[in-house]
Length: 78
Image (cartoon, rainbow, N blue to C red; front, side, top):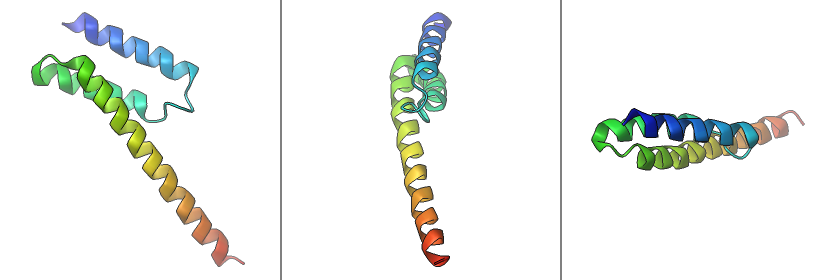
């Protein structure tokens, strides 16, 4: 059971290395989700996919929040 988890993790790390800008948050979420899915019922791949989606969602939300804060701070200095 460890080999599929290792294979998925290695594949995601290689994918993340080639397109780091598009996969922001995906690698960390996939690793955590894969481990959680494995222990929750031997569904590591499903957990990795869900973790990747959640990680990307969180990263996008944080980027939007930072952009809004920078716009507010930039307007206040005028």
